[in-house]
Image (cartoon, rainbow, N blue to C red; front, side):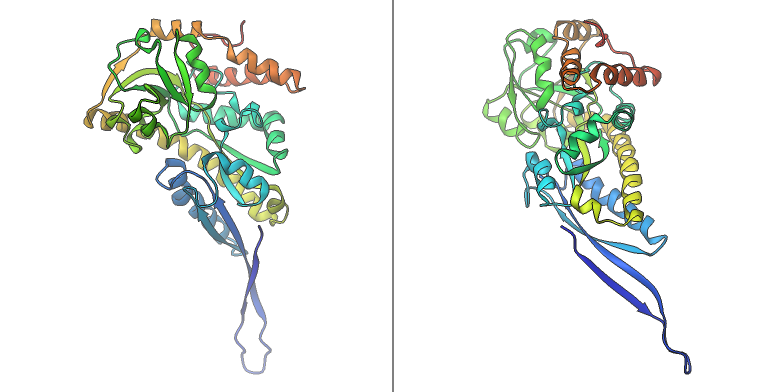
Length: 357
């Protein structure tokens, strides 16, 4: 979806000297898509940070200017449709919610299959993105969908459990219907008779309001944004951990036609956007929890002993993940070990060693 125009600035004629073109600036259109509304953190920051930063850097040389066309909230695709939308060229640049696509993007589940390790969005974002650049699997998965991987984003400091009824510990989760999206539903396999109900962030309010779910796994900033305290006034602070769930990608055909200068700027700004998002997620976490309480919510802390018990009761989904990649010819075991080593070097060690059976 490429649309090129050219604006040529002509020098004014001086005396009898022929006018000479002094600059040529190309305008490049970029259709940006996401199915989530513009109030979602990552969408808002794409508008407020990513786009202005690309514009600023391109303005330093003046060779190119972007014509941004932003389309959010289902105007082109629904939340689950960004991956296919970019593949088909319905958008040039998109923010893919990777947790919806575990079969097509299995390696993106790395942080999701290692819960109870780190609740620092910055550390997880950097570690996952470094793995994507050190191992070809992640980028190859996007290439198979006709798109170029730019950077992974983490927009949540930690998944927590928000409930419609009072909670004091793990026992209160037994037998509940818990809304989640993607791999985090596997966490419930460590809770007796708990059942996962698949849904998206924009669905959770209605799911808990109508009784389709008794609880939901999401993070405090999202709970504040989507007014979850109105239907789920109890939060169990389990610190399940930060998970990468957003990846900026570009349609391959669009990318192939971009000038190198524009490619370099998009790649560099994507990494800055990654760190910017993670920083905001951490900054807003405490504020969001305070807002949740101010809106009538109650926060209950899960003890370290119960966190360890929950992790220990789960199947080793990290080993399952690594084995699946290994069987597909990818270095799943090496990726898992390298990722956890990066987090350990950053000061984060989980309550369970996911590299062990």
